[in-house]
Image 1 (cartoon, rainbow, N blue to C red):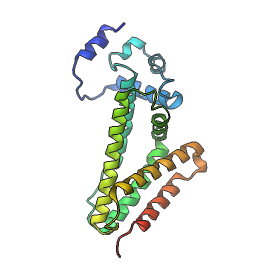
Image 2 (cartoon, rainbow, N blue to C red):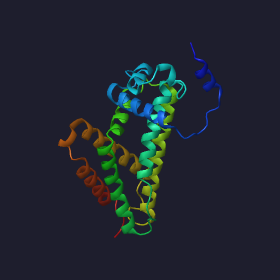
Image 3 (tube, helix red, strand yellow):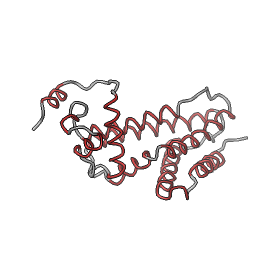
Length: 215
């Protein structure tokens, strides 16, 4: 049976809002559970127990499990977008090379400090057949934005002459994304035995060398 609180929530058009302290507690609990038990293995009852609230209280904040998963993904993406924001303009070849290397250093740092990112990637990959279409659409949009960011990065490198003028932008962006994702998964599976930052820096240097424009 749908509670009156949930019915009221569903009747109100969704609008961006700043989440309160309890929302963040619930999101934190859901994040840990999704990472530990996957999407299917995480229930609203489990989230409620972990957060120390009743299951009915959850509906004042989230409509269903999909809402929780989307909120967790939004939290992770916001943290990453903030971390990758440019601190200064990239206008010279040296600027671009520095920024390119910094992107991979930042990726390594974020994965190390927040390994849930790699877990989220694996959850989406392994449980895509269990996740509802609304969540999949949101994840695909997020992935499309990441690829667009990488395309813009490659285009900037080409315009500055750091990267070859005939470099296929779409293919290069795909290579950057897939290679980075592969290293993240290797690190998550092997832990400290796999040197993520060292591997990321090597990957970045090799791409700069392989794709370099005329000197």
